[in-house]
Every structure is written in C-alpha cells, then in structure tokens.
Image (cartoon, rainbow, N blue to C red; front, side):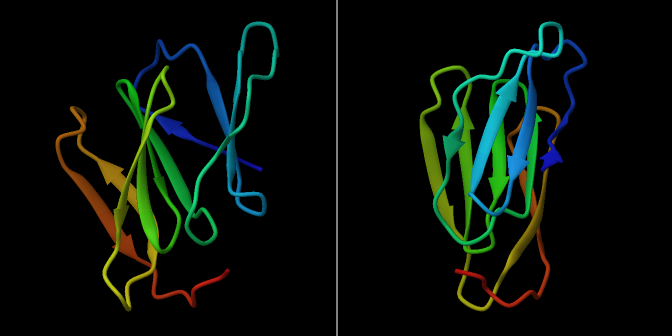
Length: 107
C-alpha cells in the first residue's frame, strides 16, 4: 500500500492506496481506526493527491475526483494512447496536471 499526499496539514485522515484492489482506504491517524474503502474504476491506480475537499486519483485510463466527505465520484477519461501515471492538482484544485507515464495499460 502507498500513502496519499495531501496539501492540508490539518487533514483528519490518512489515505492508503491499494493499486492491486483499486481502492483507497481512510485511516484516522489519531486512533488508527480504519474507514470504509473506496473503489475506483479504470485500470491500476497509479497516484492520488488530497487537495481541499477532493481526492484526485490517477488510474491509467482515467482521472477520478472523489468529493470528501460525500465520496461522490467524477470520472474524466484520458485520451487514447495516454497512461495517467500521476496527478498534480493546484492548491485550489482548479487545475490538475496529469503525467503520461507511457506505461502499458494493466487491466
């Protein structure tokens, strides 16, 4: 599992990314209590970042914005031939840069 970066030092959750299961799981850093895992579509999660009230997830074939705490998901497909390797949202989340890793798509 891989931790998820956040720009908010007051964030009340730590998110663990499981690329094999395509899930993200919140953990309360104060108590260690594990929350409900959130699954995302697409192929193989490669990166995730928390910015404000959104969790941005790159999963090779798509970018998903998960609204916190409702967990509503908004999916943005990446162009054919592109493999989303990482995301870099601006501090206000109005722009999200996506790196093309050039990786073969894993299903």
